Image (cartoon, rainbow, N blue to C red):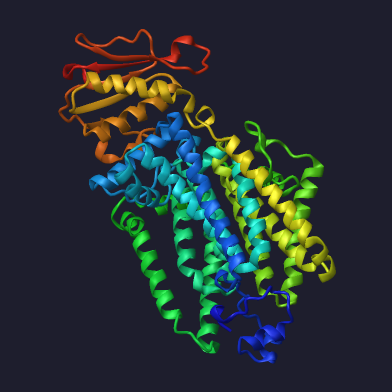
Length: 586
């Protein structure tokens, strides 16, 4: 039986009937697994087809709408987002990145300098920046990535389980967006922009394990982005991807031997391999001739040089993720995801996991490929996420980005649980519950979407509270500063870490040559911006220090009071100085 020949009816009919409809003998159906049935939108009646397409279009528009809201309010890249924008500019100017942004592992004591595995985000966002500019293009480029992920999740869920599963998956996706805050939908920083792609990847892995090899190109795209984008997604996704590949090869052999039509197999395989080769080429080049970043990542995950957060910490995070109410469906206060769960929370969390394992065994014995495969993906992702939490360097858990698997695994696990329990309901009760359930789901979707949009806004965005002041400061600096080659240094204050990269970002796009003292905290600027005694037109100092001493001839380019809360009132004032060339080494 091939994925393309599977019936489009809901996968609840007798096994023999489904197999015979696909050209397999009944005996084979009783003794072996076969690819799970597929639902195709093209087979829907016209009215239902328009509904399905409408849902996907609405999903695609939501991240773009969030970007439009903050752009109208004055969003601009600063801090980490400005550094992402710099690497995008590198793509456009021929300084092609080979790896992702530096990780914080070494800052937490891992002892190994690593970067996120790959540069794929920079290349995907580059066309948007080239057409729309460095501010609008960056926000809309990140939003477009999430739009594709939203549509991919909805489409894959429909393909596996029709309208019912599509509705559950869409609701889980939007609930996760509300939990993480609507600003995540347009945030370019790598820990955020990969969140929904990582969720889509779990659906793609499930499809491959269930024997639907026609989605292999989608699997390759999602897998490449998620695994390259951030170490958190690599740690959770890599084991699931590896198992999916093993199952995919196994299904490939069965399909080629038994399918009535396998003409699609070769072009699909070739396309997938070519896409994978192109997307992973920068990483391969780096591993052979560059910094060997993948090797450093492997050492970080497998080495024992640094104490990790520990097994207890990891098991508690899994309980918080799965236990009702699950992580993806609730809002956490600052560091709320790190709270020590009560005994009841732990029991409920692991009861959910045990239930999924038990249901997976039930459907495995029934030879229900789709549901058994979904349970397997859930368990693999949960175990992988837990392992990454164990290995986190002590203190790294305070960053939610390092535990983002809690949300993706939580959303997928509860989607799986709902779909498997629905199948166990007697057909009479499914008919009784179906219409009220659809109405309740529609109401829930409206509430979740409105709740998500209410969380979108510049005031709650990354560095949004100082976006207007940062823009004013940078505009004055550009008015006072002729285009040239400058060394840039930062002096004091956490605000500088946001404003400094924003200034470098804008000057770089203006055409200035910017050089930095590259170190553990400035590797994100890339080596070609490293200062090593080159001749410069002056040194730009971005400072939050009130009484710093500078050489004679230093000129104050701009001064801006920032609307941020700090204990030291003077930290709120950012000054940008131009130190003449003689003072550049001061």
